[in-house]
Image (cartoon, rainbow, N blue to C red; front, side):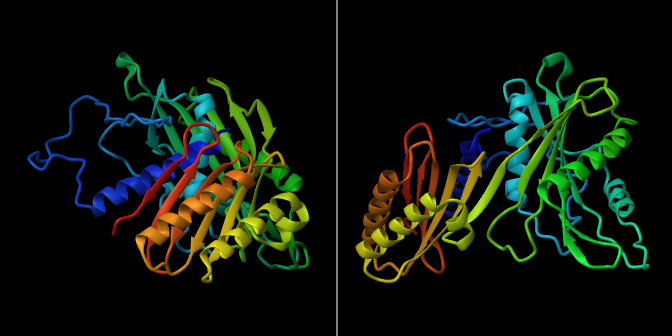
Length: 358
């Protein structure tokens, strides 16, 4: 897996927003929208250092979009969507496939699956089903003679570890228990999907939603499964050891004391350099017990752009000294009202710094 891919997508989006704010446009003003092409055509892909999927216009929104508007669950869709694409790259390479939002699974079908998970408890109370949401991504052929044909699917099943026992008491499944129940659920969903798409290879990802009181840390992927072409069952499951921790936090200090001390030192050095109060928080992504990505936000009231520049350079230098080069680091410098600077240090390649002029 590649944590840099996730951050590259976020950085690309930030740069496009900055260009739009400066009055730039990616589309020629002289052109007017024309009729849809009779045959599929490729959308342009900007040549950058990351691997991105091309697509076929016009854009088609996901069929299950908006389903979470009336639920209590919080899903970090940035992490979920980009995570699905990150895992998909190993099965459906960007050089061979195009991306399209999910078109096979309808909202009514997901609603039915969720309802089936909710069964009555022995005392008549309602149990909480583990299924929260289903996100589909489709992968299309790039070959000229099969351009736009569906050749792969990725499903993200968002699962909640919360449930009620027979007495109506709230309980939490362990990760291992949620993995086992998620596998059973995924098998039933795959059988249902195979009625209309019997030959398409599929990748199934189980995503554990964050706890209700967690507003900063996203959920995490806990397992992946493979459905081969022309097969009706999941042939292989692999556990995924992904964790997110808030920096600083008691949980981080207990589980990863070395990384906690490194971040504390970064905060002290930054506070000593800046003088005025600076709020510094971060979210770290751990894969297999190893820190792979760290996003840091430094918030303060800066007096000038030169002060922003000097502080960003100092903080970037401290990051390079404290955190191993294998860790992808994103530093976001901001005031209470707006972003001021970004510093990106990828795990491979050259770092990047940008100071916003407005």
